[in-house]
Length: 129
Image (cartoon, rainbow, N blue to C red):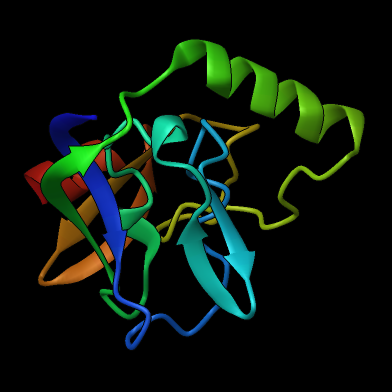
């Protein structure tokens, strides 16, 4: 166990929408019994891309003792998901223009207290007005 930053999900605030599953490139988050859950600490890198999509604010980053992040465990987990076709079906789109991650790079951001996904094309107009 090591002291590190990791995603924390408030089960009281989580509505089980599943929007946080797709942004987690490591596959650490799944919906279990109708709520989002970090399934294994070693899969969560603590980057927090899931935070930007949570509509209820149920997700935060905390520093606590947890299993060390493991690239090997992530690779094995993602290979297992791919072989059983358990990849998330939730599509993330730009909140400004509606394009998806196949059309442009998407970035998580916050604006006026709201979590958004913004594509690289729309980001300059949000920054510069």
